[in-house]
Image 1: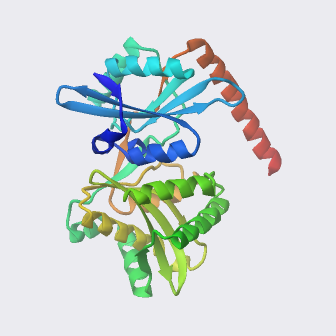
Image 2: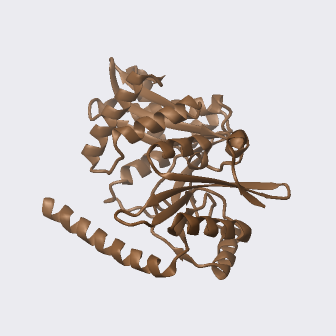
Image 3: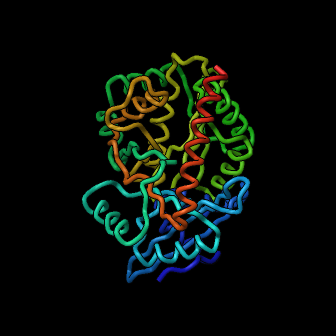
Amino acid sequence: MIKEVLEKEKLTFDKLARHPLQSWEWGEFRKETGVGLSRLMEKEGKKSEVFQITWHQIPHTKFFIGYCPKSAIPDNAAVNEIKKLAARKGAIFVKFEPNEKINPETKKKMARLEKDFNWVKGKPLFTKYTFQLDIDKSEDELLKKMHQKTRYNLRLAEKRGVEIIEDNSEQGFEEYWKLMEETTKRQGFFAHGKGYHRKMWQKMTDAGRGHLFKAVYQGKTLTTWMIFVLNDILYYPYGASSNENREVMASNLMMWEVIRYGKKQGCKLFDMWGSLGPDPDVRDPWYGFHKFKQGYGAELVEFLGSYDLVVNPGLYKLYGLTDKVRWIGLKLLAKLRK
């Protein structure tokens, strides 16, 4: 049986959420950004799963796209209900990116769904890979598992007097955003605006799921991180850094102290949110982040990837064509601006 979730079921919903993007608080945050939201709960015997879907209107049309990141793989009953809901919402398709590792069992589940419904491998919005670290070990064991250079760098930061401080205040957020702007400009990355990050910070920290940390050296904030905690798992979704005093290795100590914080909160696993694949290109702009995370002895995990549940096949094909044209145009504009 699958049904829409009521406010009174919030605690149950969060206990079942497989990822912060499926948490109740994340849904409330997304509603404040102006997108539609649906929450479904499926109960099958003793097993229960939740599916939180956001609805995004395609500009200049009356049609929508549904997005269900980091949920379980839905079964046939759930897919039928989601298709009906999507049709009522005017959605062309619903994009799923299950929080499921790729293995023979999960591949078989997806193959069965592809046989019974119109599923298409879609363009990913969330990275297919991440690093995960088992932090249900002693600190000595975790330190031994690190790359020698990583261990050296965090000890260097300690000796230089870098301090790691949790600061969920308004000032803490302003420091976080200042460095976020500096980092995205330096690296040439896309980032959501300040309003988006503020709403996210407020909702997640008010619920006790979000925490802002900063690395301070000689009175200057060099690094700021936002972390999430959900169901005994620690997550590192956002980080930013200053270009100053990079020689004191503040980010290395930040990672270590965040791991220690997660252990104190009873977390068993640290999900570092995203990474490149097993054979990363050194020219990739994310390569430095990938190597940084890898240095802590984490396991590279591969998820199933992105699948589109097609609701309106004709419009889905048309959308795919127009999306390709749009990206060609954006790439051309980027070249012209250089």
